[in-house]
Amino acid sequence: MTATQCTDPLALSNPGSCEVMNLEQLRRAGVSDRRTRRLCGPGGPWRRLHPGVVLLRNDSPTRQQLLHAALARYGPRTVVTGADALRAHGVKCPADDEIRLLVPDHCRVAACDGVSAARTARMPAPVVVDGLPFAPPSRAALDLARSEPDPARIRHLLTLPLYWGMCDRQELLTELAEGPQRGTAAVRKVLRELDEGPIQAHGLAVQALETARLPPPIWDVTICDRRGRRIGEADAWWDEIGLAWQYRCGPSTGGFSHLALAATGIVLVRCTVRQLRQVSREVARELALAFGEASRTPRPKVRAVPMTPIGDAA
Image (cartoon, one colour):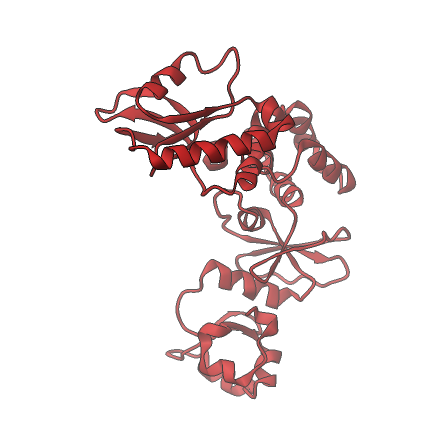
């Protein structure tokens, strides 16, 4: 249950069901402001997170509780953006120190510890994940990139939604063009020079896996023998059954490592980025068949060492 939904007085006897409330909700639940102050006082069972926002326990708040508290502080039309939004969409990126919010431009914005609230006339249509409203991936990535002075960091942030298949370069360009232009010169330069093809291959692979309905793999690994000697690389790897997938194959990539991988008994699926774009259903079908084959054969005596993918890079 979200903070804005908890109005039942019985929920107070079970704080785990509704752990963040504002003063108005507490009043409707029969708790006076005076009692709230006492319960949030030294040694009390509750904790005040923001003015008028209370955590119904005295533990350190989780990130989810902090997000609920920030939304309760700034109002129901507020949308979470930045790193928290990207993470909510399934993009692997480090958490930001601050919670980044978008609020309607007619709202007053008061300073709040740990929260950066930006007024905007272009409120995005929120995507609700676990009861919280988040900005779409393209907007979330650009909101982060606009605040970065380092071109390398800007490029990394803009590649995240591409790498995880959340949007394409044109969506980023459109979002940037429709927003305020002040301070976006570095972002525009990076976007103009960005080659999305190799980056977006991962997103296409994720979509193929959703079609195949396979369990999530480990991405970007080096396959070694038991003594740690390198055999080859896999773009995706299912460790329990020894299934490898290489989807960036081409005349100038891979060498003969696929032969070495296959010689160990690994079940290997290979395709090109073009095949991912044009015949993704056929690729998904081949993956599903290979998964079944690998499940029926002994696991090869190899181990996988994760590399650092784009989504986890600093």
